[in-house]
Image (cartoon, rainbow, N blue to C red; front, side, top):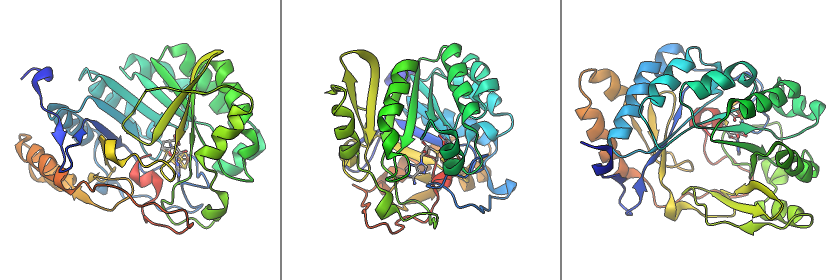
Length: 333
Ligand code: SAM
Ligand code: SF4
């Protein structure tokens, strides 16, 4: 069957699902305060999908109309042999193949990743102050990430975007500095509202939440922002400035309900297919991967059936409580 003739997956609400985020590890070299607790217990190896199983999932989703795959985690670049997986998926010829990373391994891996067929990178960067960076990530070093961003620019990716989670009293005074940095480096930047994923005790999310509207207001005091029609089918809205080629995005799971156009599903590193970031609906694909090692018929059938479980919408609230017990590193951001 030619790729063009494949009908995309559809859910009960008529949404086409053509975007899959695959988490390749729950492990990470950082312990960001909004994502993990300081003492994390990670999954035993046998519960984690092998790279071959992840590649098989990518192939099967592609045969069901998936055109876009993002690898995430945890930190995808701490998984050993990640380049083999990127090579395997790179060969599928997807329309869009991306990765979200904290950037710490990019000084050495940016170029090999590009050569292995990765198209785009999202790199997390919440602050330009090295002391704050160490506090927010608990273990990270800012200089390494800045080198990583430069290495990614030199490697010639189709797109690079910075992701910044803005927290009141922590880095909200750096919004304009981050925009200036992105303009200077000629990379896109998105500002993310903190989500109530995982039970953290380090801070109270109801106090730290900085809404996208608030971030945008602060930027428009200095820059003209023109809405674009670019739509990722997700919670992001993009703007352009008249004096720079970069895009500024706002990812607002709280204040912008994007569920009606949601085109994506996620697979955790344990092989749980999550139909919605903000709900617990899931299907165990690892059981099928391991129970039916020959032929992908059962796997395809399970994925198609799972679409019926995709809920109409999520219900995050801003009360500060935990709504989903999974940590973001388990979910795949
Ligand atoms: N380790 C990689 C990284 O940091 O980019 C990829 C995984 S990380 C879970 C993906 C994205 O989720 C990052 O941009 C991170 O800032 C964001 N993130 C993590 N926890 C979050 C939370 N509770 N609310 C909003 N964004 C979060
Ligand atoms: Fe690691 Fe990314 Fe979570 Fe930070 S946000 S702890 S870098 S997985």
